[in-house]
Amino acid sequence: MSFDRSVKIAPSILSADFANFGREIEAVEAEGADWIHVDVMDGHFVPNLTFGPPLVKAIRKHVKTVMDVHLMIAPVDPYIDAFADAGADILTAHLEAGPHTHRTLQAIRGAGCKAGLALNPGTPVEAAAPLLDLCDLVCVMTVNPGFGGQSFIETQVDQVRRLRAMIGDRPIHIEIDGGVDPKTAPLVAKAGADVLVAGSAVFRGGSVANPAPYGDNIRAIRSAI
Ligand code: DX5
Ligand code: ZN
Image (cartoon, rainbow, N blue to C red; front, side):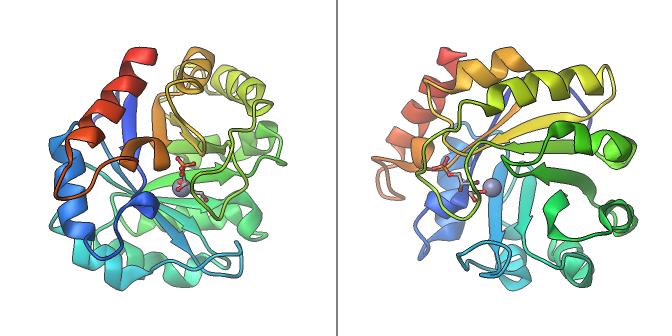
């Protein structure tokens, strides 16, 4: 993965058809997705339960772009190797998931994945400062994690601006996750974000049988920026 700060759209499969992940991934990539965002939830760190390493392994062969795995789990460390072995390209852990995030990020890179740090809306981005040199990506949550289809938290836009200033010219992606659509995308792109996760705004109105809306939805976000 070479680094560039051009804007990427990363559809979240949390909003996809759970009975057809492989076909949904192929469809949304064919319709212009740059990355595939995989929301792992453990029912403990967040009040929802999705899937784990077996699913990541099963969908790996369908992902031709980048598999961006968002770990909404606590603890993280015991599962890093399983997700890395399953084929994740990026593993993003929440700063709030445990007391030893520095070690977690080292372990993610040690397992051969790019390391991401996710911050909940209540966490000041300045908390990431001591960890930036261990990060390939920082994910600013613009909803409280756990569900798709929630409303964008506008106060996070200033957090993105501050984070962009902290990063400077280091090769670290700023990812936005939650409530991204053609209305909110320009706000965060202008503030310095370069990876936009979108679940409901991409998958709405389409299906594996009728994927054209996926392309329309992705283009609508891109052209809004
Ligand atoms: C929420 C997840 C997000 C979510 C985005 O906990 O991390 O990735 O799926 O869904 P939308 O784009 O519908 O807010
Ligand atoms: Zn996510």
